[in-house]
Image 1 (cartoon, one colour):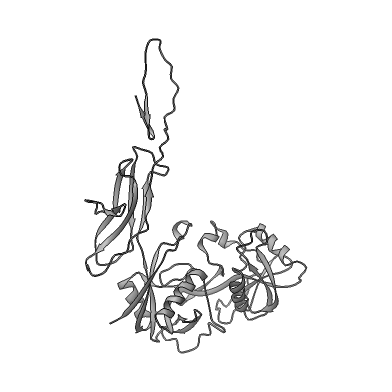
Image 2 (spheres, helix red, strand yellow):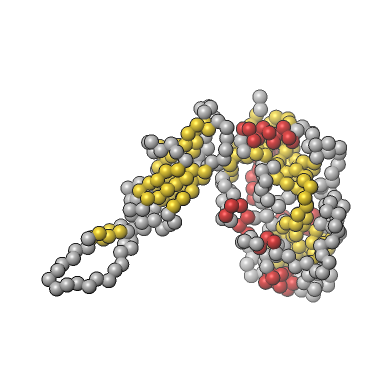
Length: 377
């Protein structure tokens, strides 16, 4: 029988379809190869764990240590299509198309073997403001990004290190290696490097690692010398997380404990757009990941079940049904406790929206009664 430990992370994002939702993580103390672990997670929960940033990584590491697990599979597996991405993976850091900004020099990027095992897959900023790709083991000085300093966000660091060691230093002492979202930031980066001539590491890199759930998180936390693609790799190479928090690539056919995640429900307002006014009919939708054994939706208002509301979508009328709404879906196996969505407060604007110009006829009297967002006469 599997021993499962779980903990809740409320991961909040703001970037459209890629934004995160609340997730429950489960440390499963059962030995399986990566493919078997993936199948287990998809049957019992949502998928193998995807990790988005350092803050989330620290909480997962604590849970693994509390469970007494030495190493555990996460949802990262080596694929066949390398792509460029930034070390700083925060979803709310990039607006539309900003993660795709590039300032390559002519003929760059080179190293066309498309294999990050021996290719030139890490990027520098040169004193001519252009970008060049190099072997990641080369040692250059580097630029960190400090998210707590909006005036001087880039920090030039000596002495030179490999790209991976530079990344580790930036994460431990600042936020991450420097990301560059537009030309204006590229100019700031040039100023931060001052009179230094030559190459400076920034946070752009290329790899072919892919998350089991299809997410695009570029967060990595490799241990020293990793990934090294050591072993037979008959089922490919997959990633295990050590109790130290560092990652190691391992043959996917090895047996390990593993970490699953369960995406929790969310309440979405379908219509109308806020602000709401008295008299509005507001439609809410309960978005829940797909499971095979769900039975019916349950809605709560101010922590009490709403009778007769068992569909995915409900409509409420203001002002009488204003309040705090949550949802979950009851599972057929009643011994499995459902997870609740975050509460969403549905309130309304009490100011009148009535505005007109009247032309009055002598001796006629019009009486208007205006209240809580709408008027009648």
